[in-house]
Image 1 (cartoon, rainbow, N blue to C red):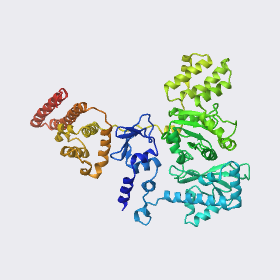
Image 2 (cartoon, helix red, strand yellow; image 1 turned 60 degrees about the vertical axis):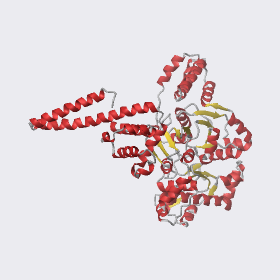
Image 3 (tube, rainbow, N blue to C red; image 1 turned 120 degrees about the horizontal axis):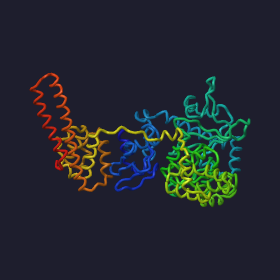
Image 4 (tube, helix red, strand yellow; image 1 turned 180 degrees about the vertical axis):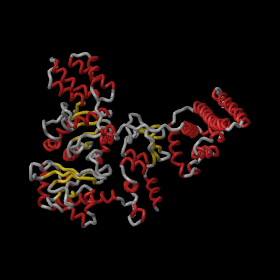
Length: 588
């Protein structure tokens, strides 16, 4: 039953369509490729095979089927990946089956708790006096009835145990409510609601499941009350990896090839309400590398919908510097009304926001404009301040041509020599944060030479099956058992290999098959390289035999066994001659 459900899901879903919902794939021959979403790289080492319905990154070596991809990209266990893909495929998972019961993980329980909480808050917005007052406030801010309902905005009653009692009555324990980020445990051990007397904005993950909340206070009781509080980090919610509204905006971001980033929930909602759909929010946090990598799955064009402070090391500026260093093209929306958020601008005049989105400036234009406006270019002090502000931003640019362009502009504005500015640019220190350091690819251990040879030889034979005729299976004694089994199967027949290989080596074969599909070597060159590789294999085999004889010879000499030593010397010399001839011959 369990395996049949998996196979049914696989039969209904195409791996290219599933992965395309997460990252931007480009056609590459019969397959698709992209920069790998699981490690930092500029080129595309990530490939998806349409024939094998698998994916593999030849950089970080991760790979698998659609279930493996969803587990990796979503950071979930198999049971959760099964539910996500079953939902996409329209396959019902019957809860009464033992497999489904077993797969009901803690994560699923927390998803259900968050979903119930969202429904509870929605009802409170419509069914309580305080909730209706909160709704009246939202309407006064310009949100429509449809937007309030569509984005599932709710209200948390000003009660210590309102939500907790509701979830308790639905069989959720206080520990689970706390783990979902919906409750707080006091020093005495009692548990109470985290959100009280607040307008509640559900936060959705990529699959539109509620994973957390942002709560806006309606009436502060003391100056210390925070305007907004968010769900803390849970196994469902990590604010550094969530972009509010992305689940709705991803298609439009791809379509427009640009992502508009704003600061708040209402900025996103009001922008969508006005017809601008490719908009997300980092929910008041500084833009992180994780968020940028998620964004890069859809576009490399980022439009900022909030003011950028060039002076000082602000959190927003660090996030934008990170975006520039990751190769994003960054532009800025000039606010139509000074000091107003997009939500306020849209509430007064939606057309003003639409015009502003169409008339953006590059981040460097924006930086130059601000730096030059605040300093005198005719004085040494002014020149120094301007260069101090702009050179770090220029250094963050990933593209060298773009760097050179802005250095020329800066040299012209300051009436300075470009060479002098380049010298100053070298003095600018790049500071890597802990988050940045975590993304530096770790060096992987080099594969043994014999393993590299066997993989390359298999790839060339899978690419051009006729080359198998030149392979003597007997010379492959140093190869792994899985490689020998594939060679034997290919020797028997290159057709229908899938059905003749044992399941334990099927994954290894699939990766080699994908590698063969994207291989660009011509047939004649492949034949020549195949002969060279076979030569190398024979050479390694002879050297391994020579090492064995060498050890036996040393032992015979230590034991003063002259007869055995003489025989072994003859064998050693004969093998050495064979190796010499092999290394100095163009023939196999």
